[in-house]
Length: 496
Image (cartoon, rainbow, N blue to C red; front, side, top):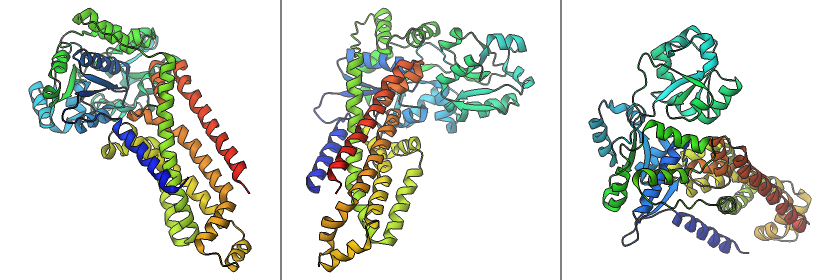
């Protein structure tokens, strides 16, 4: 197959991926995208918004568990999503902390300056809290956060976002003058496992977490009033009021309708009883707003095929592009030593960037979803192919090269007839290595809304569901072995 045909297929695939994202054009039906953060409550509320938009006759999609506050906020500002559930304390103390906002009116004014709106509070305050096992708290006689000053030996474990937030651990430590030095950052949901196993003694809680009662945790009194109110609201782009006024009107019907016990019950039904977020969201809307919603929950097989298609698209496009680019770069690097040092150096530097950081770095340039994931996977696939192509050509015996020159073969003919066939084994080994790395790294793409096998893994971690984790981990491992086997067969057929 010619290079031009490969290039045409690649461009077609990239175009298809781009067009897969919602684009508003004149005369087209209105489509809106809802976002949510990577914790259960946000996903449930995101499903409620998606149901409400669909009830208003609008095509709506839900980008579930996109990541932390900054990722979702930036996605809203850039128009990648149109709305997501947020908390007033997060907006005032973290997202817009530099603007020193003190009142709700000031908050609305600041949001308007960014082209955003927010509803009035939904009815519950999901404030941060500090908690620990009831038995341990009783034994140490701890009732207030300030009591922690007398126990520097305690091991503290906080959610990764809480570790760096302006209203998180740094400010809490300073306000209470806490002496603990053994403080770890980890996934918020995994912190509960740490508390249960005894690895951690103290962690941060959300007031509506279902795990507080399930794990018998004591919430320590915030006696210095460090944490503000985190009233749940719906944040949306201002132009949504013109594009989809029916949806916004339905969003506002949630105002004052969800109290803390109701939200805690929804979280418990999903996290502890294993019920689907979309079903719980639909049931709440039916019982409280008298709206008949069909949640249309996908079966396990439907989700599996969806994740398989998404994963294959990510791997197929990024690996194909990497092969097309890396082999010529490897040839250039082999024939021109100085250029080779530069090419291999740049590819090596790219490889050292942590994969999760690279995904996030590309969001401001390419948004969320497939495009940044494909570009990141493409960059990660370059080095093994370039290096093996370079090594394969440079490793050809000088006598063979001199014989080809003595026969009068020009440079291009020598490359095509002699060098590339002899280097085929090394090049295919590089492609095989890239493919395996690509399949594994693609599971992280779910963190930025690109789907794939990483989606059930993230959901499984969030819900503490090993079965869900295996639904993503096992197919990813099988796909990596399958890809490796295919390239080994190709290598056997093509090797001289």
